[in-house]
Amino acid sequence: MEKNIFQKYNKCVFCKSSNWTKKKQFFQENFYIKAIKSDLKISDYQLKKMKVYECRKCHILQNNPWFTKDISRKIYSNIYGQHNRSWSNLINFFKKEKLPDHGLLFNLISKKIKIKNYAEYNAPFMGLFLNFFKDEYKNNKNFYKDIFKNTINYLASRQVAGESKKNQKTSFDRSRYFLEKINFLKKTNLKKKRINKFLFVDNSSLAWGQNDNYKSINSRTFSSELFDLKIKEFNQKNLKLDVFGIFHTLDHTFHPSKIFDFALKNSKYVIVYCHKNENLSKQHLFSLTEGFLKYLNKKKIHVIDLTNIIQKIYRSPELYFLCTKQKKYINKFKELI
Image (spheres, rainbow, N blue to C red):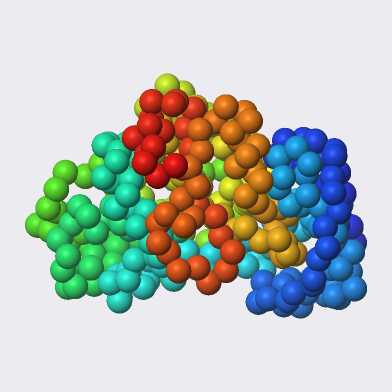
């Protein structure tokens, strides 16, 4: 067992307050926890030392103590390096024509907002990129199958380390064929002008990233090729985004307020989709609550809770909300308030 697995997180990870209320909790094991216990060789007794607290200022829930940043990186790079749910969303779409379930969210924002520039944070298959892909291309089963297969083949064919020069040349020739095929498929199946798409990433040790792979291809690389999106970091300035989506990723950074403020500053609208779990699981440092929306209102951020509006059937407690700093933008949704 490694030493120094846990550390104290006495300040709220979002608002930096030190004013807490201790919450009742019930230890629940899931497949993440099983893998963490097995690989780190820790017991239920040790995990139960993590206590759940609610911040009295912004109302997030937070485990304290929790894993060190080194252990956190190991969890999200080694123990569970692949974002299983995210990749499953992608595979289900291209093999079963099944979109991720966000209820009526895509239809709602497409109707209310003229979207030319759209961005998301990390995990590229958790949000609406697949909805935009379906909206922009012909609904053709063979096209879906071919574009998925050729994208994998193109990116895989560039992995030539350890190969002979002859095999490297063969792989390079094959990769050119696959790329030409991808471009042909997109050109002949495009049905409307594509919007500009961006994926903002960081190197948080609390998130899937460098080892989030399928068939040895990273999710960021795959999404940039498939969705024609640009990978960006958080040092960009003077952005003019219409919508910034944060889909199950705000609780996977040690700097959630920085990510959230960046999105609000650079986009007319921000959509957040997250867990809303009173019994905070141990693989998460923190979780949002409905009380967090009241905190945002106090900060003069206009918020609409979309959780029940989008008519989604929930399998676990979750929260969807749309927010903006500009009242004129929220007025487009005033009939929902």
